[in-house]
Image 1: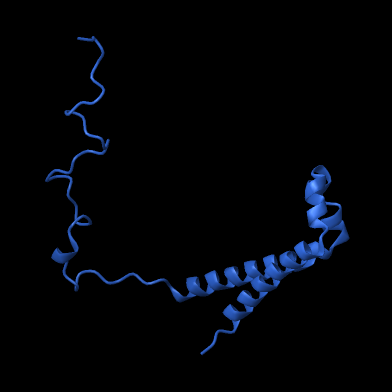
Image 2 (image 1 turned 45 degrees about the vertical axis):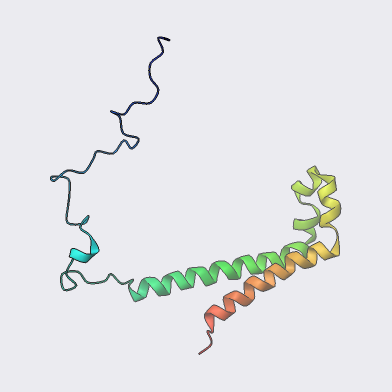
Length: 122
């Protein structure tokens, strides 16, 4: 027989967390069926936080949309981009009008999504 230690041991658990005992059970860990509906109210997101999140999301989509619409047609950004200068093969594809149109289309899609969030349908 070999003198190697046993790699798997039944005395050690796979989870390093302590096993829950009677002292470790708290009010939070009770099952949902034992909770009474009168004791806990559902948590709601405040209205000001919902409006702030919507504002930031719309602002981000407008910014990304405008950047994607403008970037492919900008000589300074698109034609003299260090990434395209370093990789000439990528530059050949980037100079293609279809690629510029696809990138601009993604920008228009972002703008459209932002305006749909500003003016939702009823």
